[in-house]
Image (cartoon, rainbow, N blue to C red):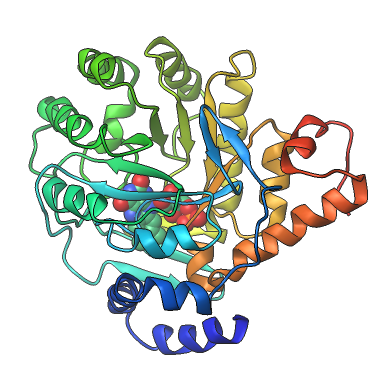
Length: 353
Ligand SMILES: Cc1cc2nc3c(=O)[nH]c(=O)nc-3n(C[C@H](O)[C@H](O)[C@H](O)COP(=O)(O)O)c2cc1C
C-alpha cells in the first residue's frame, strides 16, 4: 500500500496540482472499490470511535472540506479509515472559481497554497451526487458557501437555500465564512453580521434540525474568538471547525494549508477550546496542518476530540491515517487502555511514548 501511493504520487506530482487533483478524483470516483482495497487501511475494529455531539465517528480523524467539493468520491473516502467525510464547499449555483493556476505545492514544507474560489457544480448537482452515493455507514458533512456574485447583504439567502437543500441529506452542515478566496466572506464572521446571518436560519433549523457548525479562519484575532463563541452558544450551533487556510501574503494570494499552518491553527483551536471549556455541549473539530499523531494528542490534551485533515493526505496518502492509528495504539499499550474513549476519559493522567 505504501509503495502504491508513493508510485501514484510520483505520477501525480509530475502534473500540475489541479490537473492531478481532477484526475485523482476521477479515478477515485470510477473505481472506489478497487482503489480502497489497494489503499486499504488496517482494520479499525471498533476501538477508535469518538462521540462528536450525537454523531459517532469510528475514527477521530475526518476528511476536511475542499478535496471532494462536488461529492463525487464519497464511496472511496468513506471506505478508507476516515471517521467522517465532509464534502463541498457547495454554493447554490455552479461557479467556476478563480482563473488558473490557482493551486500550488510547497513540497519541502508539505504545504499547499490555493485560491480556488469555491469552484463547484452547484447545489443541485451535489445533491444528486450525494443521493446516488454509498456512504458505507460513515458520517457525512456538507460544507456550505455563498456564491461569489451574491451581494454581501444577501449572503444569508444563499445559506438559507443551502441549509434547506442539504439538511435532509447530511449528518451535519457547516457554514463556511472563512475562505480567503471569496471577497468579503471573512467579514461575515463579525459578531453582529454573524448573528443576523444565523438568525435567518432559525425557523428552518427548527423545522429540519441538523448539527450545524461554523468554520472559522486562523487569521481571526484572539479578541474576536470569544465573540464568535458567544454567537455559537446563543444560536445553539453544534460547534466550531477550526481552522480554514491562512493568508501569507509573502507567498502570494490565497490560503495556505499543511505544515506551514500547523502552529497558527493550533493556537486558534486552543483558544476556541478554552472559550468552550464551560460549555461541553459545544463541539470543536480541529483542522489545519494535522499530519501526525502529535497534533491529535495535543488537541486531546487541550480538551478536543475529533480532527480533520486535507493537505497531509495529498503528501502521504491513506498511510497518514495508519500512522495516526499507530500513535493511538502506542498510547493504549503504554497506559493499558482499550479504546479512544478510555484515552479521552483519562487524558489528564496519561502520557504518550
Ligand atoms: C485545495 C484546497 C481547497 C480547499 N477548499 C475548501 C473548501 O471548499 N471549503 C472549506 O471549508 N475548506 C477548504 N479547504 C480548507 C481545508 O478544508 C482545511 O481547512 C485547510 O486546508 C487546513 O487543513 P490542512 O492543513 O489539513 O489542509 C481547502 C483546502 C485546500 C488545500
